[in-house]
Length: 426
Image 1 (cartoon, rainbow, N blue to C red):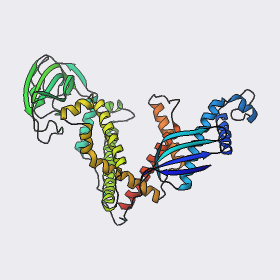
Image 2 (spheres, rainbow, N blue to C red; image 1 turned 180 degrees about the vertical axis):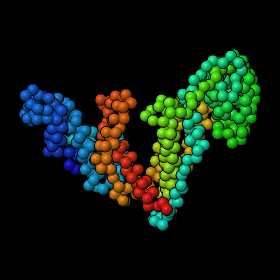
Image 3 (tube, rainbow, N blue to C red; image 1 turned 120 degrees about the horizontal axis):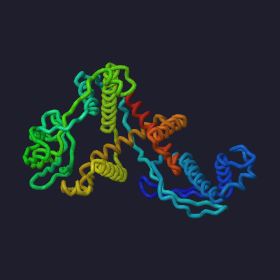
Image 4 (cartoon, rainbow, N blue to C red; image 1 turned 90 degrees about the vertical axis):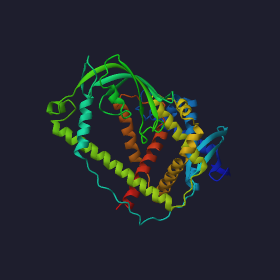
């Protein structure tokens, strides 16, 4: 096997690999052995078919196709290993020649930038104590009760605590706001999830009654496109129901799962809230450590990585909008921006995320942090079992190797974060 490089730019190289006839024969033989492990032939146990019989029962085209895949994957890995390349990804695979005597292919390699991380060994981030207040437990228990509430139709006017279903439309300056139209929207009066004053305007209304009113959203309202604006509402009540909540007793506890009594539910709720707070505190500590490392180190975010991260952020945002029944194009039209405007707004965050990615990669490499085959296989088994437990089916063409690579990356990332956390927390 021979190979040569052609430099494209600071981060990219074109690699050309040539495999000889002897190289190819070894890959074909290995591929036949791999495929033969699952082959069943009368008179022989699975995986124990002699080679002369094996070749007669294997599809030659399938063998060559699999052998090509193995040859490219393993020869590429060998070059990366021998040249000690810090490869981020590869693409644009092009087979230039593929005969029994020779295989020649080209591939574009993207390499990690060589960054310098300054020693911040003296850095210590103080970890905050976390605890759960009784009000938090009570609020969660009430949420559980509400999820199992009984509803009965009510002829009279709606009051606090009643469940209503409404049609509503919200306008600002005469134009509907994004997501400001809904049909048969359910809500419990008194929970105050809407603009302050909205639910108060519904109290006293009856089924089929309509009402128009205006409110001014607070300056610090969570939706920036509504904050501080005068909003005009048109609301129709379609349904009014009285709400009956179950009592918090042992009988109710047993309907929630494997609980002997309400005290077990309370303990479970408190433990869950505490664990959630611990995770959030851990995330805060880790992010502060990474922020300090970014500020102390000479780390530049390459333009191509920032562009890729921005594309990913826009895609994630688009997916979130779809999950809430909205379209990215309509959202952008409403706020008067383009995708490029979003990318400009988010560029600073994208650069930060790229720098974090580079620092974690460099740390893992310098400290020889890796994922073992056992860890990868264990996590892969967990993923598969999770799919099956949810009633899903495994895809026949599932790319197991790619899945293992993703799993390995997540394991290394978590190990590296844990290493930095242990090193830099007081």
